[in-house]
Image (tube, rainbow, N blue to C red):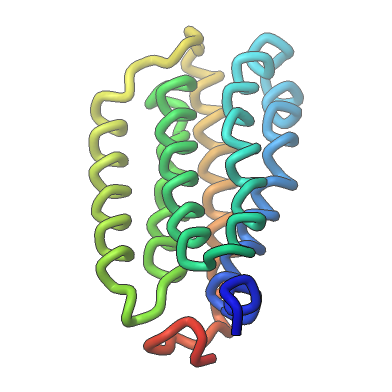
Length: 182
């Protein structure tokens, strides 16, 4: 079986790319939520959160060549996107909550035989979360206490919704030794 065929036959990669497509489809709506909940100026600041969209969009195309690379890419892009959004929006906005779905992906995107990439990415995600939760700063916008709480509530809800979707999507994926043994 060729590598592109193997990637498409791999249930872990298929589940991972479903998550990537879901993120791509939802990214543009976040600034609209912020506009609705706060105001136009806040929505303009929240446009920083869509910067990573092209990277998520590239992952399904990478999966055609290497499912393993695409699965690593999903976690890495998710971690980088969350770190960047946390720095842009500030620690008080709860953008760091998105590290939790990233940690779930680090554990679920890989077969048992791929435990070292999973462990390394989970450790990286935890370190990034701990650092940015403590030293993330105020971001590029001076949020009022009310605005920061509104964003933290939105981000918590969105991170939990994404986590639930990840759990549901991966719930029927076999946890085999190899991603191709399903």
